[in-house]
Length: 152
Length: 473
Image 1 (cartoon, rainbow over the protein chains, first blue to last red):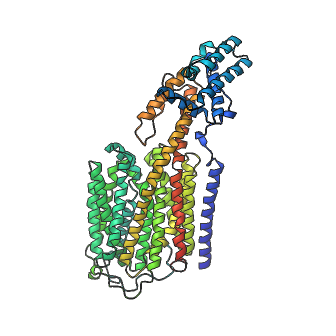
Image 2: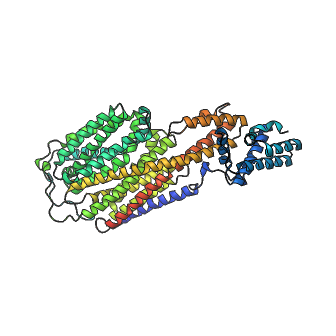
Image 3: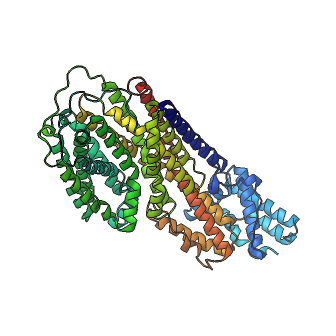
């Protein structure tokens, strides 16, 4: 009788340990090691999906695509590049090395893609490309907000 | 309750044992209740910390001393008492401890400043140390057997430690944090009545032990295991509660309900522990405590169901391993000295846990704060809003984050509503995504601290291995 009670106790302990192991497995399956909402997508494989339409939508599309291209070139993320660019502007600091060139090239490529997709007329595309190549860096960084009226 | 495998409790008659002492079962119950309350006080104010933070307008570090001061006082005084306690009158020691404890409870309940409260808590801890040290032999006398007394003392300790946060949370939510201390006064006062007019033999000092103390190594080793498990318990008793209230924003009463799965698990484990071989119960219990803390570390999302399940499993583990380890730590020629050692080392473990975990948690939360800011910026950039709205919301979000008191989650609702209709689908989606970012960041910010707790619990297997065949079978 004592032995069977003891065996029952040991079985109960083993069952509790198994339940604990199952809980851990369930947690891992539900994304314990994933980034969750903290995950930031890879800019090299990111598609720009802007839900607002018109000039606002086009401006956001060009701006975000440009930043993604620049971030991919620099090996960083859209969010990191934007926050460091914003910090540079607000604190009158220089952008991190290579950022200026990458942003200019990103803007040029994004404008080209908009033109190829028929969402940007060639004249506006040429003007924007010139601005992206030659404008002061502060202007380029602010371009996301400025290019709206030129998109036609 | 599991039975010790070796008869290493004091062999000489305990003072007072065998003598009639009127209403002994009632007195034993009252004293055991006071022991449970003294153990519960290690963690009873955890759920009240947010309210204390607001009432005293102080910092998290300062308010955490309301918890730490009690545990430091118990650990220091109990460890300092060890060389003398066997020569002291157990009933008088317990009575004085209860008087100090009771007076300090009144002091805590009327404290008008944090310094007063922390001081009163330290005094309360000193009273608890005297009470816990004296109550082990006293319960033995009341129960008619040292073993039964030690088992009752150990069970009261497990139940008190496990039930502390839930009890404190319920009292805080129903009344006020002061209710936690007011409620303890009649319990301590009733226990004082249980210690008056003991038989003359109880009042006599315990006789000096003759011969070699063969239980010394098992007592030392089981004490180390108890300290490690107590340090790990900071995860279940403190971190889980702070995560639910401050991290996930739940009410103290709901958090108390979730945490109550821990004492429920400990109660369920009691008969299982009694039917199992002590070594199996202890090893199984430690594995459960470590595993459940790992499960808390790996929470993939803010989930009360998963956290509650992990806490219940932790309670099962505690109910399995603590009674046998406590009984092993109480063996030796002097129950008074062994009991005081057990009290001191357990509270020293709690203090060790608090000391190790507080800076780790602060550093981890600071690390995820940067990741949360980036993910939040990403959520804002990708939100289905116009540029103008994004700029307005972004500016207000920055202000909300800057203006939030340190250690508190910023209120994003007003910021997300800036410059537009807060119920528009785009803003609702953005608010929900930002809230997910924050809750995921906080949940992951606690991961390192929970993992350290799991490691501390797992380390307790090392001293337990040394107990095999010496104190546990």
